[in-house]
Amino acid sequence: PDAVFSRMYNIFEAAIFPERPLAKQCHDMLSRYADRALLSGSGSAVIGLFTDPTRAEIACAALRAEGAAAHLCRTL
Image 1 (cartoon, rainbow, N blue to C red):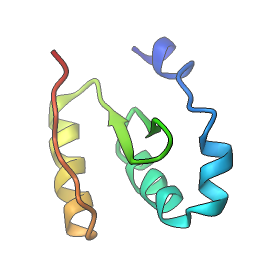
Image 2 (cartoon, rainbow, N blue to C red):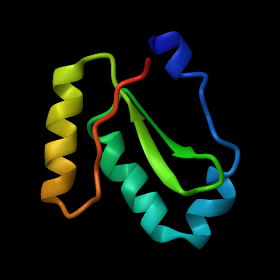
Image 3 (tube, rainbow, N blue to C red):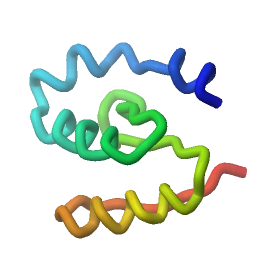
Image 4 (cartoon, one colour):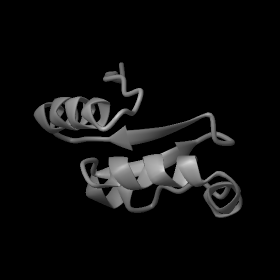
């Protein structure tokens, strides 16, 4: 997963983050916990990718405690 995660990016981040500081703040918060944090699409959300479900649960709880609207999801 690390080889894949390190190659993932969203080109919109360079344009969105300077204009939307809250999106950048959410990305930075999630980056403290996730294996990889990315802006989703054109900026409707920030997503975190985890290889460890327990770390994802911890991150979700921590982000909620910091006031973020965080949701734990699993890919199928």
